[in-house]
Length: 288
Image 1 (spheres, rainbow, N blue to C red):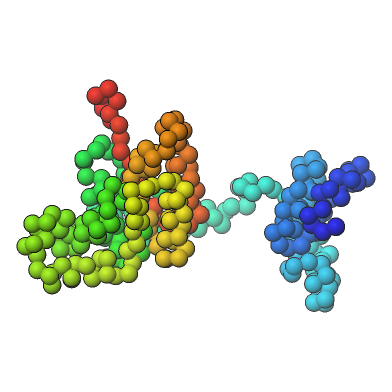
Image 2 (spheres, rainbow, N blue to C red; image 1 turned 90 degrees about the vertical axis):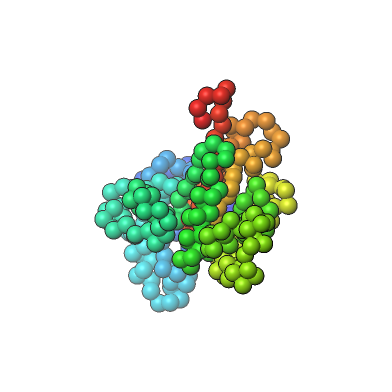
């Protein structure tokens, strides 16, 4: 009845199957086959089932290819089925012995590189402090440095409109605070265009225009799109507190945990550098 009916069919014959010391499952080498093997193995005590791995989709294709010996070999080489996420550490020497890749994404601050060895993909860097202490400016210095090195940036700056974000990046290039209107008036159009070309005009800076709305699910989708469709390899969310304040549930601690879990999972899935900003509270006028 196919892979989908495998568990049901084996359950119908469970008494007969349990007479054997070992059961080898030779399923199709695709997702339905892998899922069926896990479902069938769940009927038996741990270690009773092993899974044969074939070089082609199924045993029929191996026979048609004229390699019947590979079917026999796959039976003898069948491995114990383990749930996803369980690893046998004795098999990981090559992983342990492998030299760690050096970060190709340094911070623009030498002391941070000495302490943290640069930025790495699949890691979340969280920048925290009280309000008004310069978290956003600090993070934009890092992003501007990465942009200048050829990285593609996806930014979600939830406290400001897109225009202000672009002006702040342009200002980092020109060493002027172009967010201020009087500074812009004193800056020539040629210099403004040069700063624009070096930042927003590179085609490697993508910003989330949130229109005042920042629901977590919508933001997660936008972040995934920035990576999958826009080619971003650096993401930034500034700041997570706004995401939480937009949820009307009331349990802030639980909401924060849920959003952080989803962001951490997303970072691992997308394999990108992820920089997150968070405000710290000052409860009862004490320290943060």
